[in-house]
Length: 64
Image (cartoon, rainbow, N blue to C red; front, side, top):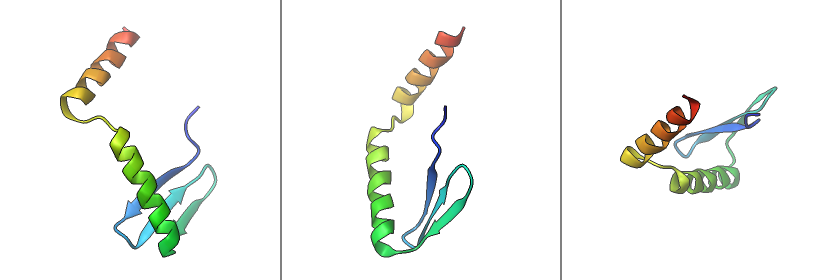
């Protein structure tokens, strides 16, 4: 099962939220701040560079 919601930050002016059945455009500063905080949290958990390649390779190897 995949997440039912995705969001895209467009600078500090708009967030587009995609749900299973709709696209929502968020422009209220307080709500933009909530999405910016969520994005920052996800970016902290993300893996980049060699560490990302290692995880991807491990996933590919697990499928073989």
